[in-house]
Image (cartoon, rainbow, N blue to C red; front, side):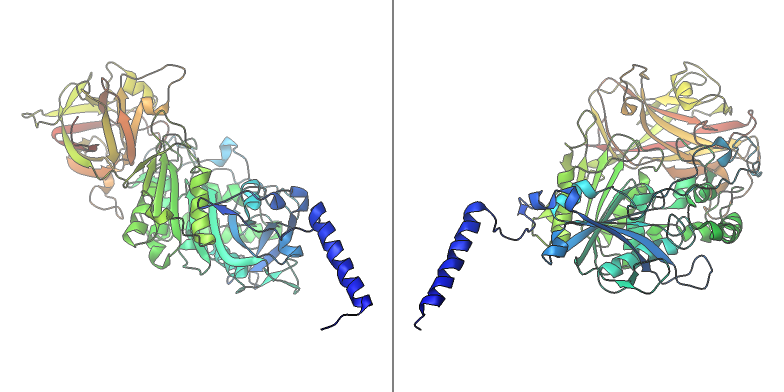
Length: 607
């Protein structure tokens, strides 16, 4: 085709204009995520907070938990790169939900139950505080944003039912706390309705979402990803729960015993309800009456501590049948708030179900996410669909005692497949120290301790002699000893009263008091039980005074290397000042040494 002079002029002009744009950098390729070495990289075009688009909305759920005759709507906040608007870019979503975003009731001592009373009797009435709601639209939270938005993810937050500007009632593990994040995920996948206002009909679409969602969070915020995953909702591809509470029974009870989470003596499920109830003030009285003062009061049973339907409905292990999201668990072996069994029990079940799983454990306390690289590989694999081989990585990553959290040691699995159960027996020694031996001794008879909550567990472990605990120790270890798994205890015991606390600590001796002491220097693991539940977790029965019963239970899972030269000590006592109720001192527990055994999972099977 022949072009005239005018057409040639405009073509040359256009080419010149384009060449100038290229030369001056004014014409650039559209911003896109960058994946290198199986991980999403920070992209400069996504990294300017002043250009992020932030907005909020309400997602309609399938339930009406505040009883106002309308489906509850959840308050949702979105933070996304500007390119999702200017260039039509669609990205996967990192989603965190919480009951804490809009403020809490604080920790006035009056909010907790008084633990100073006899077992099997109600405690004194406690205070019911009101929460003053905090926060302004459209910013629900800033968590996760600095980490994930620059790497090419959209970050979404939502306040859980009955908190902040979300409708509904907090139920602390009830069904609505699973269905609420399910609805948000369905909205992100174009299957649920979102609105610009809490009341109103103007819809909002998540046109910027690829429909691939990952969830993470710590503690209660880590529980909600698991709650959502148990619904089997499409679009939720991967979750990384960090120190999640996976069963409210295991959080507030222990083998039939009323037991507080560490650091919060006297807390119970109704306390947590009051602590988070920051929702609509006009709905609170009704919510209190229906949830706290009826469902919880009738179900949580601080008298016997038995497992029942109320607790079974708040145990996510029972709800995992529909779960299909890939699971990376994270927990601390010395988390005595949300104890390490919470993650292990879910990891074990998910592995049995054939789901993609990994578990990361560190040696510290509550919280502590996996290294960012590990999280990145997980989300990149399941949200971007990049075949980075993460599913073929070692299943377990354990931070060793003197290592940093970002330098875990990989293992084939947890517990360590090389661990073998070793059975230990007791020899007499009260009120000083008896012995732990792998050879069953000749008849040792019985030894007695006297309950007294006035003495802390650490003071009892350090005491040379005391009538308030029984302590049995190994010889000094001839080599470093690696414990990996779930220790088990069987105690044959009698009580002078119809009810008694039973507490067990496994300690490393000698006890260290240095200023730089780590918790792993002294505490190996712990466990608690109600002897009244010796035959059934669902039905306690008063003990016949001075009659012997066998009580068997697991201690908390652990993976710890006890250094050569130290001794492993089994301490049996009654009331644990930091965790249990405080009955009047004086109850006597008599332990039949010949009927008592400790089982430890030891890597290599040798001490």
